[in-house]
Image 1 (cartoon, rainbow, N blue to C red):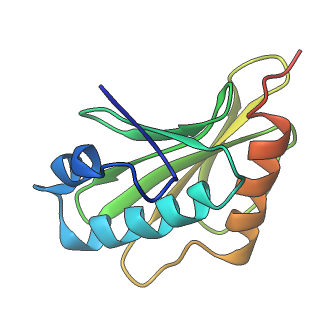
Image 2: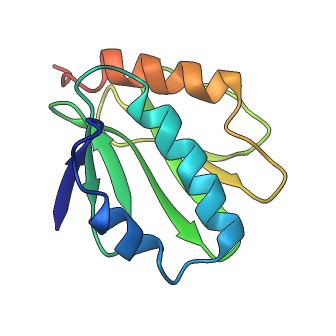
Length: 129
């Protein structure tokens, strides 16, 4: 397991290893989501494992993985939201609702998703009680 932060001096070897055998369409989508997740706040920690990438402060607030040509990603919020690419929304705790999105080539991490990542960083990232 590898940990990265959004500081430019950190190695991205773990990320490149994760992406090395992934479909280019899914890889491009993951890079766009990653950019938005890392821009959510100043102290985002990125965690790269063999199966996925997650972004956290004290608690994870977003995650993503490449599934063929697609990007499967999630954003944790305290309220339910709606979006054309939303596949499911479910409680992972009494307060936190995980929203699962699927993006494919030609689709984008739009302004609403970027705003939700910032909100997730702010309200879920520090931990909830």
